[in-house]
Length: 298
Ligand SMILES: C[S@@+](CC[C@H](N)C(=O)[O-])C[C@H]1O[C@@H](n2cnc3c(N)ncnc32)[C@H](O)[C@@H]1O
Image 1 (cartoon, protein in one colour):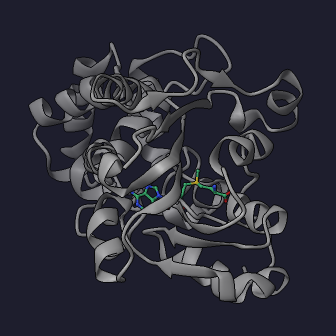
Image 2: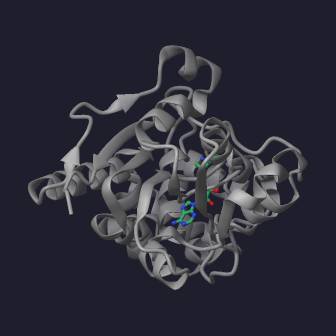
Image 3: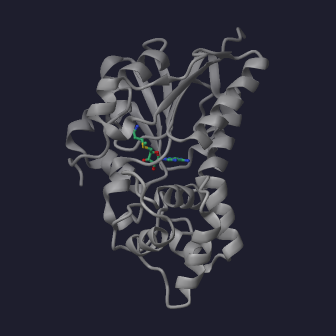
């Protein structure tokens, strides 16, 4: 795995331009993945360092073993942790505040394409979807042990899926015949209730909902956003890339609240990918970038 493709970084020039305000200090990359963004920052700015977070052991393994990027090891401090704990971790490591904070939310191409991780519709591996595999609840447990009501609520809340009641009922009926083990089985059950209308897989919203639930993605984002005012140095920026409306709404609302309390929203209009990038990297299409600055002088 060490030198194989991991993830194509989204809007890396735009992110760099907004995030790095001076060639010195410590910047956090809260979603290191394959390090595409971090390595770009380090290459362009020779005097900065990165505090990298990722809760997935594969990301840390890649960081350690990727030959090409070993030259950056002395400029990256890697924390195999959830970014929701950023404030506590910064303090534990003896840092005060940061020169900038970046988060590229969601999952990497490596996680989606690795069939053993159970994120992909066509995988015949067990449903899993945990980014951090030391955590207990996987998609398998949710699908096989949660009540019809609980499943329906998860599909509504995190997938905004209008067929949530029918899909939850069909899952519970299928469970009578035996465990639902694989991603392919689950997509099959969803397709038996919801017809394919366009190119999009009918199970897309169900998989999104499960992934968000299993990883408590919105809870982590909430904690992370709440800590921003305490971790940004004066003049420092937080740059966040979101990929679906639930997380984008949360970021937008938090930034509005911070703005009322004296922090500054840098882009009134959300920044999206160029047409060229959307064509060359279809997974970047839904990306939205929002930027906040600690404009207080202390
Ligand atoms: C979209 S990918 C980032 C890709 C990265 N920018 C790159 O260029 O390779 C998101 C990464 O963030 C990690 N991640 C998602 N939520 C996290 C959280 N709450 N805490 C720590 N890592 C998280 C995932 O494991 C994944 O590797």
